[in-house]
Length: 493
Image 1 (cartoon, rainbow, N blue to C red):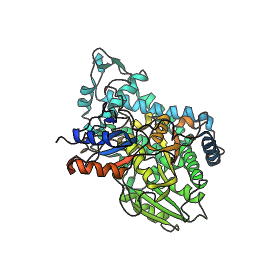
Image 2: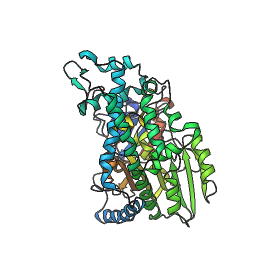
Image 3: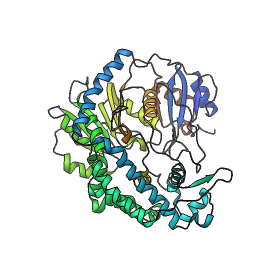
Image 4: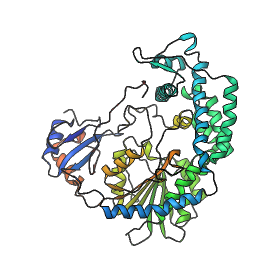
């Protein structure tokens, strides 16, 4: 038997579409209540997402609930404003543009110093990657450089030949001036001096970083210090706003467990969001499980936060099934995921798995970047490339698109599909910090929609399929997302 698909395909109870082995397809078609399904590639075997026959609008947020969510978000937005009180937010767009300019010059500088596009030379994407000797896992970053430089009119692209040409090369004086302005922007945005040093250091080492002859981690955590990382995730104005808004949203929520407030934080890292949350919950009895995929962060967190009542620490990987007595179905009132869920190889699968861990009225709070920053293309994005041994990268809406972050609208859609009633995104449109990209995206578990029973689906498949053809996990969702529309890699978007 060929086994179930591992390409993220969608199937439907009508039999239309849905790449699946015959036995799995027939079993799902015949199963009452299952209207659509999706096979999602996994580290070992695929995960199966199953959705109800005809969700329609039965499970969608009611008007009175929408007003409740708006009222719930107002104090959180006010807490964010208090956290940045006194700062000149009107200057932020110009400061962000200064940082982007340095990144654009750094991209062009690498290409020019590699003697690309000189004397009228034209090259396609593959030739650029070869001449820079880019490690395969970082190829997407250089493809993004090329398309970004075209958009910014620093490079030209001929669609008929698929070749780039006429690079606008940076001069030394202009590059030096931009680096001085970078420090001005850094101060205005509230980053510590270590962030300027980090951005400059990555720009100077880009050829080696792209070849994997050096690592960004050693620049972000010099001698094991977290000062630079804290500047990126905690100290700047956008991060300060969203961290305090997320904390207020959690503190203002309700839970029905009848005991301590049970919080799971995934991808907690340096605890940049943890500390505002703990401060906002002073006096509240807590069962707080601080988790990350790296033991490095857990060791640091135990030192900083281990004396807080109710704190526990553990490993958690958003790309693998949650295991352990602390993460069982319905075991958490709140799940917090700050600047981590974009690392999920399939966001829909990750959200479905997290929803199962929440109580019926549970709250999921995400902090996410919802716009692309050029500065990240020459620094932090190098941390986000797939590992050298990964055969796949993103298998959701980002598949084949050379991007990491989802838009606000995409996050809201993903929450809705996974079975959450989305709350208003913070900061709201029109807020001075909305264009900075960092947003608080939250949702409450939707409980008024009948979903397929994963246990019944698993039992049905077990009776009809050999173990090698069965999914590793089965998650019920409100609807499955359609297959992504891909853009040919290497072409300007």
